[in-house]
Each structure stands twice: as structure tokens, then as C-alpha cells.
Length: 230
Image 1: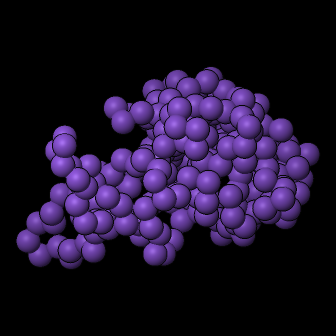
Image 2: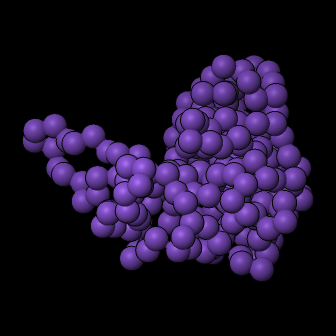
């Protein structure tokens, strides 16, 4: 496996049994994070073929999207589709399957409030709750760490949510670890101390902080139960 840039990988596809692998193919990488412990030569991955665009639509450079990477100990899989947590959480909220938000109803996704845009707005008795969802892939000895690279955008989201919380508006952050080998989630202070400080400040301001993990396999990804966020 090679990674020429943040959004591109080169991988070898399995051939028929008994035949060698062919030439490398390019696959789009949805996760721009560092992923240094995952994207290493020899690691197994799953790629999804991309349908050819219909007439008149621009062609993609790559025919595949990389969606799963084997864990370092080869015991499971990690989803690297950063758009997936929002889709899963959105569906679960719409169906009332997220007990952390029991009594709240999903109002809208990708909603603007003031100068900010948040992933979801929920409502209860006419009052809003603004929710941000963060995708987590980095795990060290059962601890899921976010972020795996400095995130000015993530820090800004926390500061904006903290301001809303101080004004008496309900706010929350939900960290979704896209792998099953997770006992707890915490801010990766060694990678981004500014984000870690902003998370602590947001919690003190009244922002609710939640965590979930996922069951990941080539058959699909399932949102599992809560894990603590330290």
C-alpha cells in the first residue's frame, strides 16, 4: 500500500485463487487524517468500486474508494469513511435509537446557527440541541484518541458549542469510534493540546460529551453502545 497524498492510496487487488496480484490500483481515501498506524505496507484493506458516472457528469480519477483497513493486530477492521458516522447517527436519531438523546427529536442535519454550522439540531418542547459528531479511528491499547492530527476546525466547533451552552442552549458532542476494540475515548493531548483544552473547557461550560463504538466488518458497520469519554 502507498499513500501519495492525503486523499489517495495505491493498493493491490486480490486476484483469483492461485494467481498473483495485479498492478496497483488507485483508491480514494475519505479520511484525510494521518492514519500512520493503519496505512502501512502489507496491511489488508477493503475497497469499494465506484459506479461509472452517467453521460455528462465529470469522471472521477479513481475507480475505487478505500473503506476498511485491518487493525494492527489483524483481529478486526477499522472504517475510514469519515462520512459514515454522521449517516449512522442521523438514522439512529431519526428512529429514536440513541438513548443519550431520549426525548429529543431530530429536526435537521447540517444546520446553521449564527455564524456556525452544526451536524444536527434536535428539538424538545420547542427548545434546540446542537450536536457535533466526530469520527475516531486512532486506538492505543483500547483507548480511542481524537484527533489523530491537529484540528483547528474541531477546536472551533468546541468553542462555539461552549458559547451556546453558557447562553443556556443545549449542546453535545458525540465521538464515534469506527472500530470495536475500544474501552474508552479521550482527547489526544500529545497530538493536539489545544483541542484537549477546548474539550475540557466545553465540558465545564455544560456541553454534554458522549462516546460510541462500532462493530465493523466487510458485511457492514453497526453503531454499538456507549463508551466513556475521559
